[in-house]
Image 1 (tube, rainbow, N blue to C red):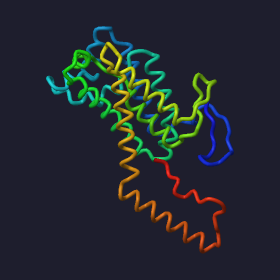
Image 2: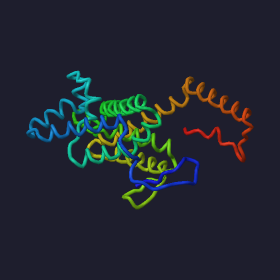
Image 3: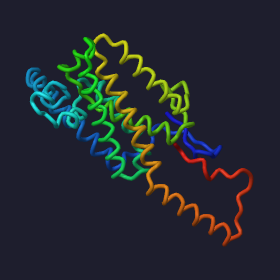
Length: 254
């Protein structure tokens, strides 16, 4: 359950979840669930073979040129709990972002963060340490890298919106993102099994931050922002409208 209201308004209401599924999320969730059901119906041996072929295995990417793995690994999940919580987070944090960004940018952001998370895992697996060497032949599956990217975007877009942990304890989204990032960082550093999933999570967070900063600082966006500001200033003068109190125009989300 989360609290809703405008970013700067004191008005708020309570609702479970962000509402109906947006177009891209319908497709993504349907694809993930369909793949999970098909794999669940397979014999154990065939399921493992599919995971090794379509999941992310750094050794296979280099040695067998399975260059599709940084994309296809996002659609594989190992257990019901694994896919349930990933799809729940995708719905909770992705629906409003798609409405704000539009479907095209949302999908680009989702796949860029997911692929970069995979690339991060591959790069770390090449480091000359025993812990990272184990990652080179291990299988990584799941949409968690892209989901962490969406989590970061949600925290930057709605920094003060409460997220209810265990449906009881409210915490602002910006602090929730910080906590999840810190957990991923500490877990990756201390995981004796190589920290594959946690490294992937970190990759998603980093990619999301870089992509959003690049979008915010792009010349095209800056031109659009200046043009919109110019139009609003003209409208204020034309209709004799003046803002009272402190002008919050430049308080844009970073």
